Image 1 (cartoon, rainbow, N blue to C red):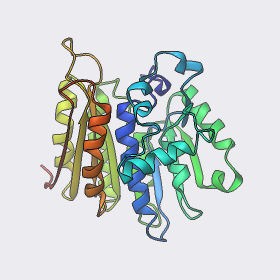
Image 2 (image 1 turned 30 degrees about the vertical axis):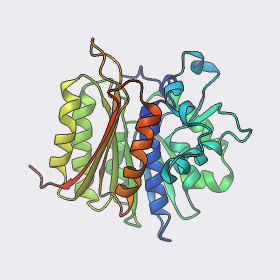
Image 3 (image 1 turned 180 degrees about the vertical axis):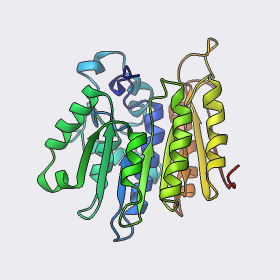
Image 4 (image 1 turned 90 degrees about the vertical axis):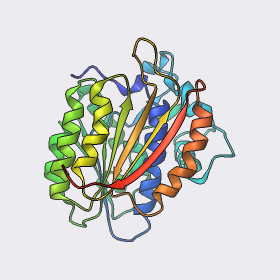
Length: 288
């Protein structure tokens, strides 16, 4: 299915959770001089205008990044993400939201690499246009591939440096994506067991969504962390996104503490009703 366009959802509460986690993970990888690879399996268009084009629709950013823009009391991991967003809005007004490719590229050093996959033709063209606008050194660090990111993982893992972060966040419009995420993680771990994997997933009224985390836990015998942020109670009809989660395989030291510091603040700032809540669980589970 190729109907999903992230521009309508850019900067929503799901993006906030995903990208706070992403920026924190990238900060960890930069602590060592050894090069690392970032892979984004469902990259999108990279940059999203919140006030023009598709963004003229009622923006979901109003319930996400706009609630946090300008806050001076954010904990350090949230403040680091806000600072990254601000680098794409140099006039001080929030008009552009950077997706994961832009945030990752912003964090790369000369020795690091970014591999992006996108299947949607229009999103892929926008991604290529964004890459072409980067400076020459940044362009050399970023590679854009048209195609299925699940399949693309097979060709890029393991990275030569044996250091890598993989972000997996399909649209989940097609319910088969839940099973594909599970299978893709299993195949990736067989190739690159020590890699760090961050998997975003929606909280929706769907059986596949509720069983995904259990399946992911069974896929890994290594350390995992699962965090969720629910901003409201599910709608009576079962429609709409009431929250989201990020499941991280091989979370780096210090990441759990950073998220425990961030989640209460995000929950309070993004809550839409009194059912808003956050959770964080960690563990090790052998494959089933």
